[in-house]
Length: 368
Image (cartoon, rainbow, N blue to C red; front, top):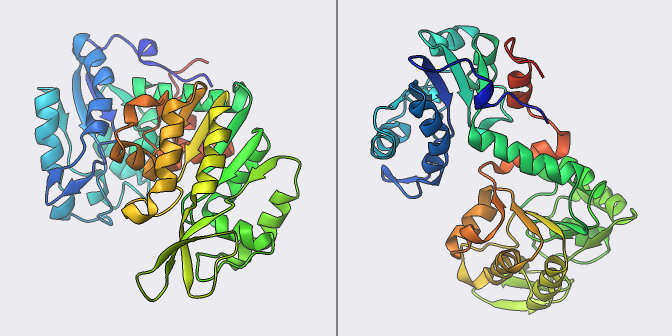
């Protein structure tokens, strides 16, 4: 997918550059818990600064709902950015203004006022048609930053020419949230591995009892159609379940008794999933296998994370909770590509494009 890159920009010496970054970092009591997203923007910032540009960064942080909220003020991010990239300015939280999510042209005017160039390096927000994402390319010479360009290169490669066999591992809570990407992936992968809360809707589609586990009854028929397709879908053969009322935890087969709730894949399933990953030429993983924040239900997700780290194929992790799990297990540096955008990576795989990418390609200054 051809995008305008930093090298396609006019000479940036002495120019003011508006950089849309993704500094939506985790905060606890106003303290940054992980500055990965800030550090991820440094290659782009350094490239611009080395060429004499004056960089003003902007980002959203949390969900302040269109009004100032001190819990989501950019002060901690601004302080950390000043340490890592002195001299780079940072605007206040974009979502403090309702014009950001509404894609209000008047808010775009405010953002681009006094700016000469625009760079989008916020892959995690590229699936949002928000003012700071799709507005500036209509007004300024624009380009993708290093992070955004790399994300698109890797994820487009999964769609166009993955090394075989190509295995997708999907987890998380709900099937309904991932129906589109399930359909898109099944058209491309050699095998689909399903864990997490979403597996119980598939198990019900196979005729199994799921007890009090998460179930989307309105998606059972869709899951049944997916299972009837030509591609292989690997589901858990056993489940770690907890008492709905009580403290009991036990491993059961594919049928979860009433009064119990499946919260992780079992050891047999974990071994089967690991074998599938080990033999893959390409693996894409998005979504934990269980409630990994609780150590009693972390084994399945840990097994998948370790298998990704050990896999000799090309490994891609689609951000979100999967990235959090890798970090929790100390494995974040042992996969080939760790995406900074969970939702954006899924939407790119589903649709093959994103609003932020279209905006850059449609920039009046870009010649494909």
